[in-house]
Length: 333
Ligand code: AHG
Ligand code: MN
Ligand code: MN
Image (cartoon, rainbow, N blue to C red; front, side, top):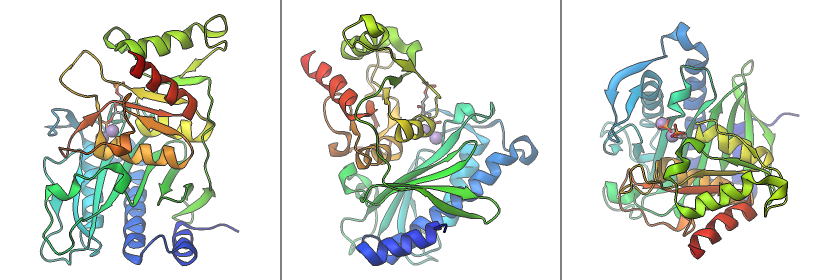
């Protein structure tokens, strides 16, 4: 018997009281938006969704048409339901408060509408990443301040990967579940529960072209992996780098591994490339919920107190023993 996302959420709510109805509605709406983005992605050139939009986002990155399409789909889907107070996105300068014509709820939704933008035009897996928080003070109006909560405060997080299959991966703090989009039925169907990342791995993911810019602890770790059987690790490592965090994290949730986008000397003033609120926090929570670990080399990512909406962070996540090893190299340095 197949279990749809709707049924899964209803049963979770009934059995564990984990998902209040407003949050359930929110998750259903996000899933529906992801379904619609998945259709746009699949149309590709036929839907005129490839190529650049001719604009830049607040972080100075060139926006692809699909970055904007995905952002608009998520905003439109989520603003009228009454479950949200505001949204924040990698592609918008400031927060999007639910317009006055709709009721305001107490949840806050953050997203990277389209992750892996450089892969859109070359037909490689991309995705959507999302994170949900609750307004701290429901009696007050919503502001950017409300979003500046550490990742430990997330009430739901997930991503949808648009690859050979469209898969939605979700946590509400009770483990990680995966749902595959059934295109005939038009619904997400539960295909894996209790996802677990093995503590050990022989696979790492990092953009090796940045090697000369890395810090010593990262150099040391990768160098030891590269020495293989003859080196201090006594085993051969394999490397993967998809350049879509969603796809790299999905592989790690499926078969283990370690993913790193560390700080590097290219832009020493920036703590890293990836964004804390839209990428690092949701992925870190999913990884921890699956038994893995996630740090910035010095501290658990979920414990970081954000000071800015578009804050960046160094990311090391995946199989627990490897993440602990890289983190310990930072402590010794
Ligand atoms: P986005 O497309 O949302 O800007 O994110 C891309 C991110 C992440 O998905 C990926 O791991 C990384 O950037 C790839 O960066 P490089 O091109 O520097 O390898
Ligand atoms: Mn991204
Ligand atoms: Mn993006």
